[in-house]
Each structure stands twice: as structure tokens, then as C-alpha cells.
Amino acid sequence: MEQQTEILVVGGGLGGVAGALAAARLGRRVILASKYDRLGGQLTTQGVPPDEHPWIEMFGATESYRSLRRAIRDYYHRHYPLTNQAQRDPYLNPGNAWVSRLAHEPRVAAQVIDDLLARHEASGHLIVWRGYRATDVAADRDRIRAVTLAGPMGESVIVTADYILDATELGDLLELGDVEHVAGAEAQADTGERHAGERADPLNQQGFTWVFAIEHRPGEDHTIERPATYEFWRSYRASFWPGPHLGWRYPHPMTSKAVVAKLDFNDPTQAYSGRMGRVPVPPGDEVNLWTYRRILYGGYLEGSVRDVVIVNWPQNDYWLRPLVGVNDGERARALDEARQLSLCLLYWLQTEAPRPDGGTGFPGLRLHGETFGTSDGLADEPYYRESRRIRAECTVREEDISLEARGTPGPAKYPDSVGVGAYRIDLHPSTGTDNYIDLDVWPFQIPLGALLPVRIENLLPAAKNIGTTHVTNGCYRLHPVEWNVGEAAGLLAAYCLERRVAPRQVRASADLMADFQRLLVSQGIELDWPEIHPL
Image 1 (cartoon, rainbow, N blue to C red):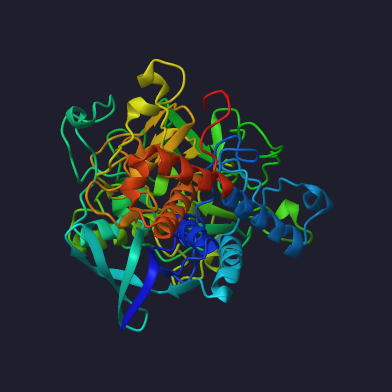
Image 2 (cartoon, rainbow, N blue to C red; image 1 turned 90 degrees about the horizontal axis):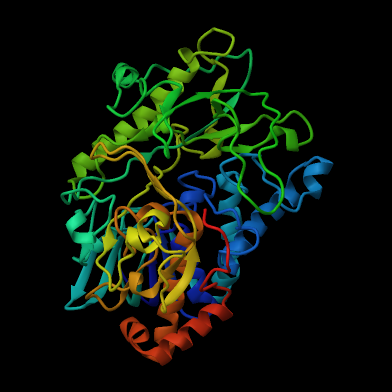
């Protein structure tokens, strides 16, 4: 079967959704092909509450991203039996978590995203295909001619489009279409970055995490079957880890000193309040992981409602094998081992984890399979932190944004800015056995040049696959930035169709660039930051 459209978006994560929405808003014909039924990627199929900067309630994100956040809060206000205090809170944090100002359930985000897309589907501008993944890309010189998609019933569809947005989690179209790209870590000689390695290593990639959700039912026993690889993970210890991987001690990302974690189900801490400032990290020598990524706080709801907590902790970060640049068998093995690690962590929590009362194990911890609705209770897919990245007209380097590296106030300024972001350079342990790299950065811009491949004319990155390095990917990979990248890519494709110009021409022409930026601003995209303090 063959299908033709103006814009094909492959990947149903945040970048893909934002790109499809943006192009459909401007009246273009769009097909959004998603591997999963739920759209939203990091927020939904991966189950990660949004990682955001301290000013997110006021500025530093696109208007459509803020609309998404408002709609998520409104969903809880309209549909949940909130206490009077929670109902009156305009900045409700449903999970009362300290990792995010809007920790919420994946299914709520998925419902809200479907609602945002509905009007464009009804108008005929947007078609959403669920259960579709790319299997082949046909190129003709410097253009992508067609993308072959495999459907949920084994069918194959060949889609031709004027523009293709690669919003896949690992930059799949870059490999399938022989688009020039980079994987893993670059060499210091190539990027000039202080924290790059001496040698390039394409297989040195950030670890990923297979997330799951739990609740606590005291007095009950929900211990799972002992996982087959439990003995391995029970004794595994990386050289930079302060104790066994399945344990309460792990290295602080910024200082590398040992952090001691615990589970306190009755912690009265109000983890979030107000509209500005940092989400407060609990004081003291111990970190309560129960409140860290909690997505539903029973104290905000009438009746007997249990907390639901997302387990995306240091203890289930997986870094033994890479996902990119390996064959299908090796990738499948890495994914299976990551799933096993998460199940081993749950089993350790249920049976051997030291308790504050001197005992061991929390058998009342129950795998909350309802959160994801999968057969094993784990998320639909892992939380990917690093993708293939295009070789771009402009590559963002550590020296462009790092406080330490720049030696001057403020980040690099890009005249071709298509958005903004702010987050620390946050690299998790990698397959190259690197420890955390965590660096202060200036709130930064997103240059259009980072969205333009050096050769291919009609493919645009729309997720974590833009022109960053292994190092700067660590702060360009989070939720609001991915959304902004996808939205800018969708608007660029729509603009180029309307003006009958190529993306490269837009950046090369001062007049076209200014005109395109006026479109971005009219669509609610911020191009620069006000004067604020660094993170």
C-alpha cells in the first residue's frame, strides 16, 4: 500500500506530537506514525514525570507546551476527587513529588495529548497511525523519497512526503536513510569540549532505564517471583559506585559523594509549592525515594487512595550494553537485561532492602501494573537518554553553554534561535563506564542550524537527534526542549511548503530567517531568555 502526504512525522513522543500539532495548526496535511498506542513518549510510554527548569510556570517554554501542562492540571481538577486545598491550588502537583512541579500519571498525559490532537484529526489535516514503525527509508541523492512503515497487523505502507520529521527515540531514520550522524561520545580533539574523552567511542552511550510503578499495601505480600538474573545484579557493583548496585547508597551526580536513600511512606514533606524557584530537594543525609518521583499523592484525594510512585532511580539505570550501533540481537539483549534489572530492584526492595526499623524487605510494595497496562507491569518502552544525532550545520558544544567552560557571563547567542531551554548538563553513567557528569549551564537557545542536516534537504530531526554532542545532549534531551524542537521542526516544514523554499535557504537568508522567526513568535515560541540567574 502507498500513501502520500505533505509532512510525515515518524515517532509519537513529545517531539513528534509537537511537530504534528504545529504543522496541522498551519493547515498542512500531516501523518503522525507512532510505534505505540499511547502518544507522549517520555511522559507516557516511558513514564517519566517532566524534568523542567525553575521558571517553567512563567516563561522558558513554548505556549503549546504550557497549554499541555495546564490541560494536565485541569484534568485532575475536573475528574479527580481532590481535597479542598488541592482543588484550590492553581499549581497543583498531583504527585507532590520533588523531582517535578507537575508529576502526574502517564494515562492522564496520554488522554490530554489525544484531546489536543482531536480537532486537527476531525478537520482532516492530521491522521494518526498507531502501532507503526519505520523499517526502510528510500533516498534519492539529497532527499528522502519514501519511508516504509510496518503496521500492527504486519501490513506494510510506503509513505511519500515533502518533509519527514524523525521523532523516533533513537534517531532510527538517520540510520535507515544513511543520513550523516553521530552516535555515542566524540573525541575532545573533535569538539574541543573539556568533558569529552580522549578518543571517540560511538558505543559509549548514556545508560537507559526501564521504568515501573509501585504502590505500598502494608500488611500484604506482593513479592514477585525471584528474577532469573537476581544473583548477578545483587552482587554487581560498578567501580565508581559506593556499594552494591542493589542498595541504598549511590553517588551524588554533582559531587560523586555517597548519597544514602530510604523509603518513608509517611513523609509529611510538602515537596512542592508556589510558582517560582527550585523544586526543593529534601534536606539531611538521607534522600526519600518514595517522594522523589511520586505521580499520585493520596493526601490530595478524598477517601482511601494510595500513593503511586515511579521507580526511575539510580538503582535501575542500565549501562552494560549500548542500544545504537549494534545488531538487533545485541540490542534485544540490552533491553532484556534492563528489564531484568528493574525486576531485580523490585524483588530486592520486597525481600532484602534494609528498613528503618532494622528489618529487611517491604513485601507490601506492589507492582502497579495499572499505570502502564502492560503484561509485566513495566513501562511500554525504556526511558532513552541518548539518540543518534545528525551531523548538523551547527553543533551545540559544552563551551557554548557551560558556566565553567565559557568564562564569560551568559551562553552563546544564536541569531537563528528557534526556541529556548534550561537544564543542567546531566549525563548518567554510560556504557563506557563513565560516572555521572553534571555541570551548571546558562539558560540556552536552540539554533535552527542544529535542526539542519549537512546534506539531506527534507528530513528534520524532531526529538533528541538534533546537532548536539554527547555532552550537550545531557541538557537538550528533556521534556520542554524536545517539545520545542519538534514544534520548531513542524513549523519549519510548514513554512517551507508555504514559501516554496528549502530549510537551508531559510537559515542562509537574513530576510527569510527574520520572517520565519516572526512566525515562531506568533505561534507562542520564545526565542530568548529574560535576564535571569543561571541554574
